[in-house]
Length: 73
Image (tube, rainbow, N blue to C red):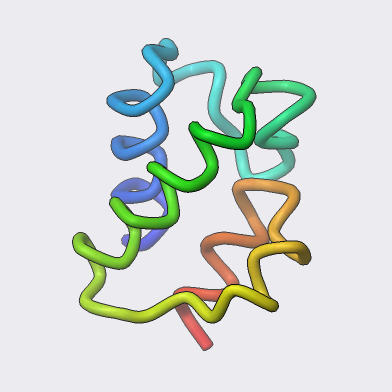
């Protein structure tokens, strides 16, 4: 499941507890990611899912659900 894989990446990248990460979690506000964390996270997602995230799309990624939807489309 995409969400589980994204959740694992977030837990690893940001040092979170798994139960902190939900589809509704705002990556910056709820999970405490800064700009550098976001860059690292996008790179990890690209590697894990074998995709390329367009830079212009990154501004629309605010929540964990946004990431999952982006990957699934």
